[in-house]
Image (cartoon, rainbow, N blue to C red; front, top):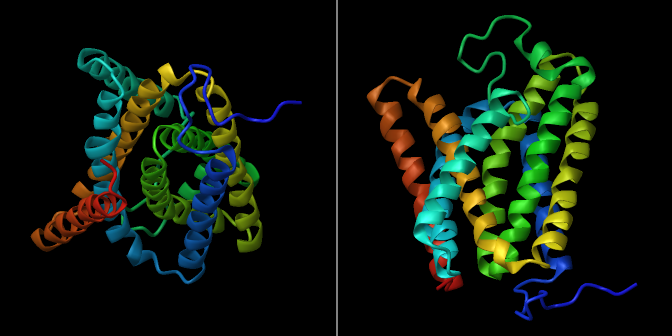
Length: 273
């Protein structure tokens, strides 16, 4: 059986090998799950609010400052870019509307006055809904990581970092939902680990498919950007808007700006362009 080549079918050299892509997807998932487990085990839930703001800035900066410009740099027509971006946003809306994709960070006792039994309903029987929803989400993240690495090694690392930072509050919320639903912490960790395998699977499939068709890479970058924008605008920002005080608003803006600065700084250090 012939191994993976370092070139695409068009003859263009690939920017990253399969082991690098799988390592990044595995490491990103491992960091997110272990960080979330530590936060939830320590019950440091107050740290989630600044992390939501930070991940908002990170997702927006990665999408608008790197993924979309990279798609244009790879020859994508700007009219086609915005058409795919619009389609991607509507696609993720439909997925979430039918509960195929979930981004919720909510759980009981998070200050949003959820009714008793909210977490048990969210978790489903034995945590099945959490595992299925997160597996689909992580599978898509793995494909996004693969597409970014195929374009540029540095863009791949930035994308992996962005996903990992967003996954920490997401996974922490899921841990708390599972725990409040009556699932032991050890079992909750195992369930989240199962869903984490989907990220590696998505990275493998994404690399396999996209490495054979580099013409699809700009489209993959736009869809990755649409995913980041949708999470930030449709989920994270509305969640932050529920905090009404001026002081909380300034804190949110500070952490959003910090997320943007972090991505901009890392891009300059990595000398992306």
